[in-house]
Amino acid sequence: MIVPGARPLPFRPIAPVVVVSTALTAVSLAVAMINPDRDARDEPARWLDVLGENTLPTWWSTALLLTVALACAVTGAAARAGGVFGAGAWFAGAGVVGAFALAELSGVHRRLGGIGRLVLGEGALTRNWFAMAALVVPVVAAVLVVLAARVGAPSSRLLLGGGVLLMASAVGGEFVAALLGGRTGPAPAPVIVAHVGELGENVGGALMLAAAARALVLSRAGDALAVRHRRAARGRDAVPIRLTALWRWLGGVSVALTVLSLGFVLADPAHPLLRDVRLYVDVLVEHNLPTWWSVALLVTAALAHFATFVAARNAGAPEAAFWLVTAGVLAVLSLDDQSQLHERSEELGRLVVTETGDFPFYWLIPGAIAGLGVAAAVVSLAVRVHARARVLLIGGIVLMLAAGLGLEVVQGLFMAAGNEGIGFVAGYHVEELAEDVGVILLIGAAAAMTRISRGGCLTLTYADHPAPVPLRDEHMGRTPAGSK
Image (cartoon, rainbow, N blue to C red; front, side, top):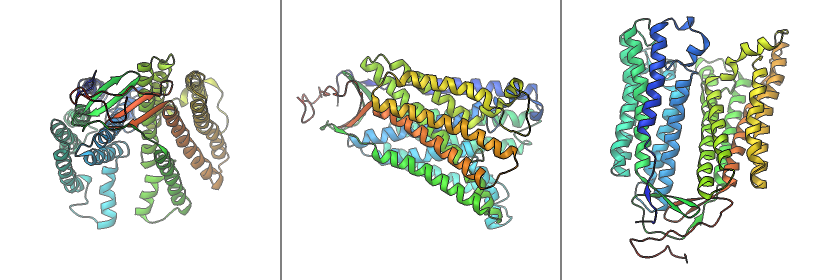
């Protein structure tokens, strides 16, 4: 099908991803070569460590994989709208890549060895996570082969090649580094191998993102933007897409994770396996399932605001640039959530005031200043949009800041008083849930200012211009049914 103004999706992800990933890897490797002792490095050097957990490079890898997962989901939706075979494979691919992102952030693959030992006992298969990976990787590779066969060329080769490179780099890089003495050194060879493995994972992610981009064609029809699968069937009547189910799922998952965490914390199980599960679901603990969910919500919000910026700019809306600003702010907040930027500013807070008692959260002082900047960016957009979106923007950011700053003060007072009982536990669970709900409201604000419809393609229109121009099929010589 040929559409006026249709052009290949103007996004070539491989080059920019490789450039950024290579730069981050090179800086991290230079730091490791100059100062092999990780414990002796200062805070900025630790924050740049590719092999660390709460660092800038690990956030980049997680955000990349989450973006790939969302891109696969959009491609699946476009394929379904156009009646293209293999739409389900794209949705399944989104789930697989989302699991990769979870492993990147929470290290769930490394936890497999410990869980295996607890369940199966000490043995060859449970001695470390490499043995477990030897069982899991072939299964995942087989799934990727099936998915690639269903999405068709040219995306099939990119999807399969990217997935295989990602897994080979993740497992192979750490395995070779372990044989050479361990990825943390001090010998340079394993450190170099581990860095190359991390870079290979990002390149694999870029190839998978390119697979989704190659399957899509972007069209501009007046004030509307249409994303169409390359092999989409003849256009049909446009039908608005309602996102009610999406809000229920996002809110439901947030509530379910909070309840799960609260249950395990209050039960405080003594069994080693259950204690490991508690650590993996406790919202107070970093680098686990709730952390991944929070980061995923923030990355989704950033991409939603960026998509709204693109739609607003296409429509000529004067507030378009403000959506780009909030997209950047949300991306930084996701970086903060994963890499603990706020906690790293603890020393700045202690420089401002005299230390008092045992209060543990002096990062709240620079955090409050940063929060004012975040609020200013969101409010600057809120005063320029429709009433519903304005309420969602202000409600979302107020809820996030009140929970992230206000409830942290309450928790700090509990901890300073040595009282970490029911009140403390309830407080931090309410905080984490409120932050997630605040982010969902910010996603809803972007949805409130756009209209999405499905009719052979996915059409995105800014709310100030709700009537998309019909897409004429020049190849078939007719407009979609029902158009004038």
